[in-house]
Image (cartoon, rainbow, N blue to C red):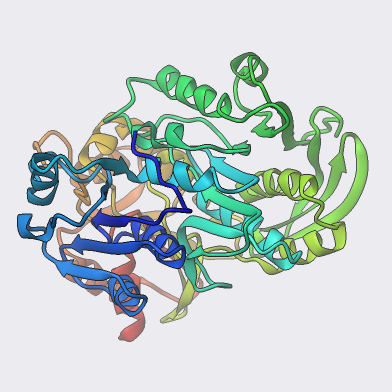
Length: 465
């Protein structure tokens, strides 16, 4: 594999440079003296930022964008071999490096590089931990899959010591990383267009944990099934965390949340125990049981890096989440409008469980499934999770990288929900959904646009009306 040497900057060319992660990596290379160029299908705020920083940006991926002075081509899983720039670079024998490979090479340069992994909750936990370190004056570099409002970016170039990285399991890209410490939030069925089954996913997370060297820590959710058996061969020290509920003793895990309560907005407050000893009473700015759990993982790493309890508590209380993670958008005709990135059944279940804790007349969920394969493979689980909502409005499936083969549709989900006695609707366009909600929504409703595609546009348009 091609190796990046920060002491010898070269010319790196990015295929899909406008992506949220790729643009961040490009910024980091620019800040270290590299020559950066790249291509994308469309101009954006991110490509304009890169141009201002000195990158050469091409709109449209064409063979002529590959020039002889390029030393390495960076690509993502979305780039296929028939892509004209990919094919031209291969023809010229220019070395390739995947996005994950580049991230791994960058991580090698930091004495403390934290990989935050899990099927759900990666973006929120990465953001929370990053802000804990930032608020404590540790000046971390940050790479996360969402916009952190406090820094108004998904990427931050900080000092030379700390790097916090959201670590995605899709296509096993996180196995190219070099974490000194790691977090594993949960392991659930997802990305079944790549993984064979849940056991295959568990195997990949075990391999990721195995990347952490001796002297590091791997922070593991103690609720993961047979977690001690799964991670028994680690070189690092395993630190567990979990929730003490229904009378459980707070000594089962290294970090435990006990005596948990929630306010009218679903924000958690709990007693934090460290190795069975009461450490503090925590109040979160985040909502939901799942974020009580996620906060413990961030706390475990923050404590390792010497963040004081007082500093930690301030960050935990002030941080209310990244954009598109149960983000409050505004009031629409008396309904409180939120937007959420949830796109697999477990995320939907967590978000709707949180929504039901609000003092709302009805929870109305506008859901846009993400990819045909995920919708088809997890169809019963989607129906079950969405049933937590009082009303469901289905939008067409967001194709992303896939082609519709006609085997699954959003209307199928709507029909199954209705068959199960739920109030559900399906519309084939955003315009129809917006017109329906303009009449249907009423004061006291909690309205959520949900999905990893462009369903956020529906809420934005409603608020303009």
